[in-house]
Length: 97
Image (cartoon, rainbow, N blue to C red; front, side):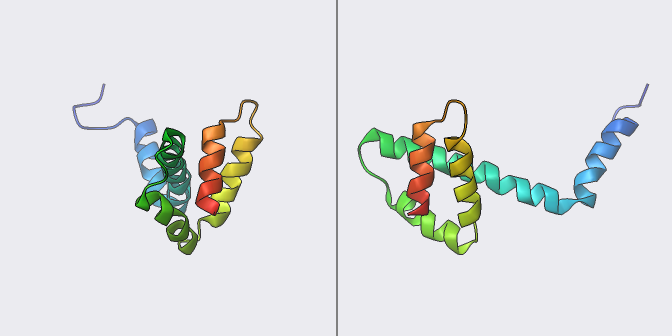
């Protein structure tokens, strides 16, 4: 039994791994962020009110950051799913415009 505050060996190794491989963590975060942005844009587009100024600025900002390939990959991945979400497909396409 471990005293309070000490991690078991398995948990310690798990906690050290991100520090040893920081690029893996950094590369995973944009996928989640891009999907969250696409969800918000999808809701805006579906509402019928039209895209907000932030949504209109998203594509160029992400393009300058070099995320165009990631957005295209997410679009193709969503389109090839067994049950594709049309809202997400429209949002990814909007982000690429």
